[in-house]
Length: 232
Image 1 (cartoon, rainbow, N blue to C red):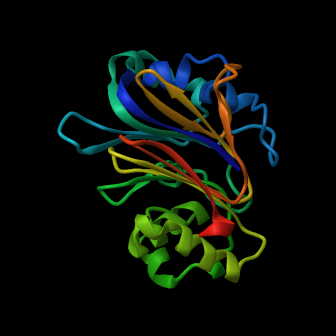
Image 2 (cartoon, helix red, strand yellow):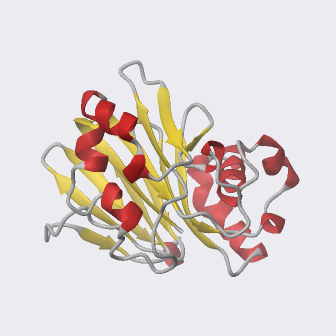
């Protein structure tokens, strides 16, 4: 399993979003509070963001987040209004390499997967297009190929082929966030300058709202909408 978060709003530094919150991704890399499967997330990390031109940028590593002094030194200087970050706990048998760390991208969208899925449930075409042979990278390639706007339908079809899969994902295109809970929950926090969506609240602020399993959360300039997948 993994932990991930997305931010959409006024530009914030990557340090403010990833490293500085008391229970944020840095702490979740070694002491997650709500993770159901796995004890820590030491198999890599990644941060993706959209720059002032709208281009997607990424910084990924196969090392634990807590041991990356280079990122810690530059994160306060990197700012964005659309960020997707993750720390990784690799599925057994999957490679530990930079290319296997989320977020994955098609150039327009950033995607993170929290879970596991059988490669047999994913098409060969996705495996051929994926950045890595790991299950999350292949799933991301499949979502990109079928269209992120159809992510719920795509995940439903994958789950039909692999009923034991955990398929929670976060996506952003710089203007919206889409999150699907499929085996794990999400939480979101509406701040005066934006919205955060995360596997776990990064602090104990009571304003964090739960997105239960099998729901879709959508964040845009119009606000936050949560939909029960049973009603779609």
